Image 1 (cartoon, one colour):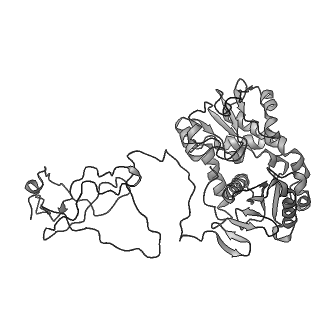
Image 2: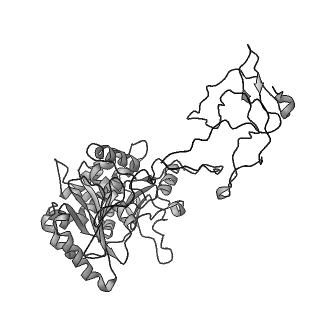
Image 3: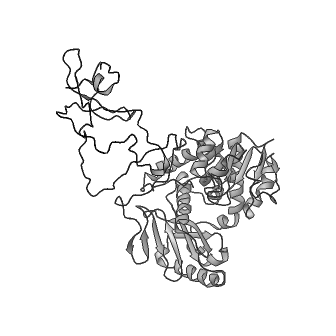
Length: 443
C-alpha cells in the first residue's frame, strides 16, 4: 500500500461513494476507473508533461490531471487507496486490435467550440462502410448507396441520378469545359429534396457535357442523341448554363411536364420567390429589398417586389462586386452560385431575411453564423419551386404564390429554423419509399 499524501505531496480527500466503472455520455472527462491493485511499482517510460502529438499546433487538454489513483475496496467508512508512489501505473486498458473496420485516430482538440451549433452536415462516407465510386457496369459509377453517375459513351459527359429506385428523375443539364461531378451531385440532391418536400416520388438529376467552346455544339448534339435512348427514358432534363432549350428539344416529347411548365416556369418561379419573402417577413409593404440579378428570371423580380409594396435598393456594384450581398436592407434575394454566402462574408450581410433565388447559396458555416444572429435563411428548394404550380399532382395548388407561400408558412415556426425544418419534412417523405440519401442540400 502507498500513502498518497506522502508519495504525491497532494491533498487526498475521502471518497464518499464509488461510481460504476463505465463511461457516460455526458461529462466524459470525468473518468471512472475500474477497481484494481498494482502490486509493484514500475519504472517511468518516457514520461512527459504534455504527451499530445501536437497535431494542428494545439495544446492537449488534460483537465489538470497529474495522476490517477487506483481505488481498492473500502473497509467500513474508511476508504483504502492503493497506488504507485514513484513511477507510472500499469495500463488499465488493454490493447484490442480492431478487425476489418476503420481505425479512428483521436488527436488533441482546440480549446474552443468549433461546431458553431451546426445541426446538419454533409456525411462523408468512410472507406469500408460502403463502396465508393464502384463500377457496377460499363459506364456506370456508384458514388454512394443511392447516387449513381452514368458516364456517357458518345461524348465527354455524365448523368447523375440521386435515387436509384425512383420512378423518374428530373434535373438540369449544363455545359462547360469541365463540370465537376461533385457539384452535379449536390444539384441533384437539391432537386430530390424539392420534390420530396412537396410529396412527389422523384429523384433529382444533374447532367453535364464537358466541351471546349469550339467543340460544344457537336458534343451537346451527341449528348442529346444518347439521352434519347431507352437507357434514359425516365430521366427528364431542362437546359441549364451553357445549353439552350433548343439543344434539348428532341427530349421534350417524352417529358411528363406540360407545355405550360416550359412556357411559364420563369414567371412562376419568380412569383414563388416573392411570395416566400412576403410570407417570411410578414408582408413586403414598407420593406427594403436587394436583389442579385443574374438571369432573366431574377431580372423580373424587381417589378414584382415593387408591386408587392417593397422598396428595391440597387447598390452600385462597379467598385464592390458584393455590394448587393452587403446592402443595408430587410430582405436579400440571392442565388447566383452554390456557396455564394460563406463563413468569410456572412458577417457582412446586414439583411435579416435571406431568400434564395438559386440552389444552395448559403454554406453550412454561414447558416450557423446566421442562426446565432437570428438571421432567417429560407430553404432554396422551396422558394424556387413556384414552377411546380404548372405541373400539379394530387390536387396541389396551381397558383405559384399560394403553393410556395403555404410551404414557407409550414416551416417558419420549426424549432431548427425553416431550412433544416424543410429538410426534415423532405426526409420524412423520402423515408416512406426510398433510402434517404446521405447529406442535406446545404453547401
